[in-house]
Length: 337
Image 1 (cartoon, rainbow, N blue to C red):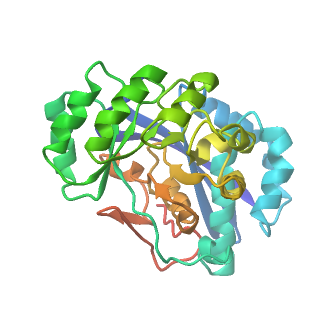
Image 2: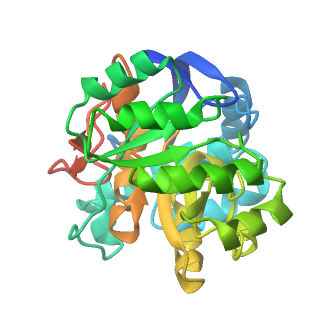
């Protein structure tokens, strides 16, 4: 087994703004696991909010390199468990490694990963396309760059959020989702939801700061729209806490540590009768192709990361008009130059 690390700066189509930050270039780490001439690939982007940098991820992965050299990838989930004590403080790094292990596992066995999990590609959810915060005119133009998309996710957290949604609604009949990224209060959420429901908004993602559990319970009980946890649901232990505070959870592979813990979070959420979504962190096609393996298990998905880039770095799964198109190759289907 060989470990190879690749770093890239991914320029975005547009400056991407959410309630707490703006970025024009997304730095990303690609992990390559190579065995007998076959390579599997995984990805984790940097993220200031969660303290994930190229340096911290690289150092964490180098620290387990000797252990990897002694391994065969026969069971990616077991590898994740074995390395968790060393990597638990670096979930972004473990995510990229876990994705690479699954991709290699599938390629060695000659099957897509979802197939090895016993899943089929029937009735898959369609992905939204995300519109970052900007002037209303620019947000309209962003939406029109991907016309007739079935679902748009609109980033909010401004002092004119309802006007943004009202104006965008005039240009499409598509379903809307809104994501405040912790930018609202409980009162704002309950009030805004009344208008948003009239404009065919499907749900509200993470309206309150992650620590506002008491207020979030009040929102859950009174809101006319479903509320989905993001920043409040990071690791498997958070799923139970979200019961009676959110109607569903949005799992980010980088934040939880990869496909292995994501599948455990999905299973637990189903046991608790919660809705399940997986989202992206503006990854390239490497990370998006990993997300695609989970689609048969989901109610909702946000896998538009590669579409937000000015230029991609790999091939694999494609998303067209919200629908996932799988390559006829094993693993995650990732081809990396």
